Length: 413
View 1 (cartoon, rainbow, N blue to C red):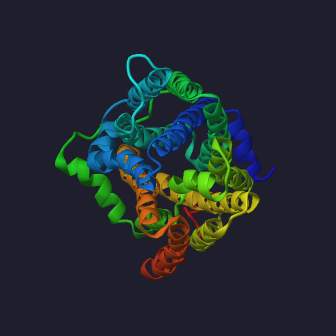
View 2 (view 1 turned 90 degrees about the horizontal axis):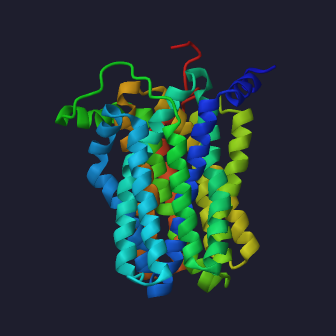
């Protein structure tokens, strides 16, 4: 049996990992379902691309404001409890939206959606670094690369099914969608509570200015890590068109909520297929060049999607986009997790989560603003061209990353 096959077999018998995997599925499902519902509902209320961008900004803003605190909390306290409190609050937000759509005491308004989007963004700013930091405590280091690929597939599996299901349920009635989201968050809380406690390799860091800034300094001192996560930041910031999918579904492709769900699921279909490939065939050599090539493909697929007026072609372009994106996710994730000491993982992953959030939520805001200024199609195409430009610049500014061969040394640490 090959070493790759042996690793995959070992993971199959690691029960805590599969509880973690299921928790990731449920967490992502709850977020994706509520995001589809919020996006469609706020656009129905206002008909404004600016409001779609504002939802993304409100979900991202807490990560900037709290980035140093969230990492320190993850490193100082039980990471399972940090995730648990966040999940309970997200379930409460979904329950409020459910109650508002049922009528009675209050009605749904764009202002209420904005406020709850801010709450959800605050919760995710805490649960993302804590959840990411749990994985290295659950599986041995030799299995971490495959575990990260499988954990990524958890996100993608949920992102395939949950948005499509959310769109179909929203067509039946908004309460069904928000109810499913609340249930997903609650069940995820049970799964996280069943995970083993994190293994800590030393005393938790005291919360101080020095400890708060340690994650930033660590990333800045590692050019390969800094280059990898900043590449993802600017590429997806410019090339992401997720916030504009309601506009494409409603105005360009002439479909309904079900079509929006399929569009949101399409990148995850490609990403899940690529995750399965990477599980069996990890990137062992030329990792830097592979990552830059994948980001370039991401930019090209964005351009094709932006110009498409065909629903099948749009789905195909989004699938290619998702396949390319997950390669970057796995390479970057493996690099960060393997080269970060456990006692600093919360703070480093908090900064990494900020970069991820910037590329997603801030990217949604950027897409909404540029679409409002120059039109939807020109905004998406310009974003794809910007992604290609970022690839060229980063290869020049981070030559060590571009030339990097193996992610980790062959010697055991």
